[in-house]
Amino acid sequence: MKIATFNINNVNRRLPNLLRWLRAAKPDVVALQELKSTDEDFPVSAIDKAGYGAVWRGQKTWNGVAILARNADPVLIRNQLPGDAEDSEARYIEAAVNGVIVTSIYLPNGNPQPGPKFDYKLDWFRRLKSHAAKFIKQGIPTVLAGDYNVAPTGLDIYPTKSWDKDALIQPKSRAAFKSLLAQGWCDAIRELHPEKPIYTFWDYKRNRWPRDAGLRLDHLLLSPALAPRLSKAGVDRKIRGEEGASDHAPAWIVLR
Image (cartoon, rainbow, N blue to C red; front, side, top):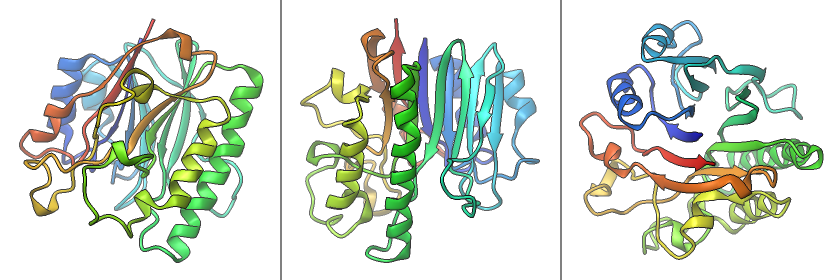
């Protein structure tokens, strides 16, 4: 079972890129983020023609998350992270596919920090941790997939000081990610590539893609019920170099 996460950065604008990648990579499940599409404008018929069922929650202009399943219909469980009834941002969706719970997470960016946006990021992390604990406690096979907007360690960002004030690498952001892992989640890519710099995001600015000036922001965390089944993990880097590409590349895992 191949499960991927992909911040598509506008699903309609990048639809040709997405469909090409789906044909080539053949993932069984895909968590998409940053749809930048309303519910009505989500390209459901093109995705259906590509052989994928979908559940999604859109939002005008920004945010938006979806889960696609190959030759299957994902069973929607929830389309909002519990813990704050006032939070109307489309940043979380959760579905069951072939006996596995898969999320699509688009964690807040948090910039500028300090300030209300960074506070929202940390509060969202706390809510995620509280919800994630239930999967661990109940022994449910779960993949917390998505764009976490955190580069967890120095290995997850190219050598630079230019991001030092950015919310993506603040000690509090990294501590929040570490605290989530401490519940028992396995960071799949790091599990199989413990020492290797690996990136999933290259900003459009300052020639960062040609310079390989990247960050690893997109993660697949496996519950203890799934971690022993992990056989492969990687990033489809070349997708970032295509014409009209998202600034992220898909990260993926294979489960036995």
